[in-house]
Amino acid sequence: MTKSSAEGMGGFKDTRHVSPATLDARSYGQALLAAAREDERIVCLGADLSQPTQTDLFRDQIPDRFFMMGIQEANMVGAAGGMARVGDIPFCHSFCAFITRRVYDQVAMQVAYPNLHVKLVGFLPGLATELGPSHQAIDDVALMRALPNMIVLEPQGPEQVGAAVAAALTYPGPVYLRLMVDRGKTNDDAPLVPLVIGKGLVLREGRDIALIAAGIMVREATRAADLLAEKGVSASVVNMGCLKPIDGNLVLEMGTTHRAILTVENHSKIGGLGSAVAEVLAESALSVKFGMAAINDVFSEGATLNYLLEKHGLKATSLCATALSLLG
Image (cartoon, rainbow, N blue to C red; front, top):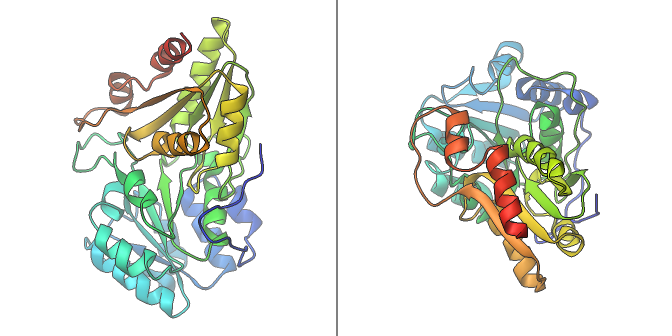
């Protein structure tokens, strides 16, 4: 893992003590609750989705700091801006499509522009819902990356959720957390994974191709690396849990030590992880074979996540084929 600073964000210092329980928690609800018990400034706002966003734990145990705003996400974000101005640290919760696309103007003008200590927490990223285009957030990373002052984090799974919450609290400005959380399936045997703003993690070292992934696609990238190894191809796997600011130093390291880079994401090919990596490579004028495994500028349909990942070429077998084609 290379060192990298949060370039372009003005730099920042850790503004609070983060409870060890926050880092150790393997569910978002437990991580938020642990943080709130350590810091009375933390308040929880919901949009009628307490159970799906795991905020029912906060509601039941710290009810005086829980605010159910109803199905009115724009008002929730506006209220969060006001709370932050008087010293609170609001965590706003909804599905990814609703906490970004539906309330984009409020996020821009009432949170990002004044650079307030507000955390926006979205669930059901990308294709992770059977409810179709109205709920599938395939453009949220592009939207949030474009906002000045906004940090964008996407942990790989339960083993990195606690670290993501802790990282969000170290930044005294707006943060978007993109979460795929399956309640009750926390994989307690998996080792905890750190997450630091502005840094990625090398999970596996190879020499031929670097698979740079985020969120649930880290799992598929790892499986693809196993398949490539069976074919004699050595692949590195990078967990890019911080999408903005991107770890440019690590991207360049992968580009100079591998024959190719393939980004893997549960998002549109436009404006997401692939775009962020491509920007780094283009600005550095580094010549390396480069490809993106992502959703190809189309709306999808309501179906199971497994089916949709297969359809859009995001399962391990398809990633393996894409990598081999890229290597020629």
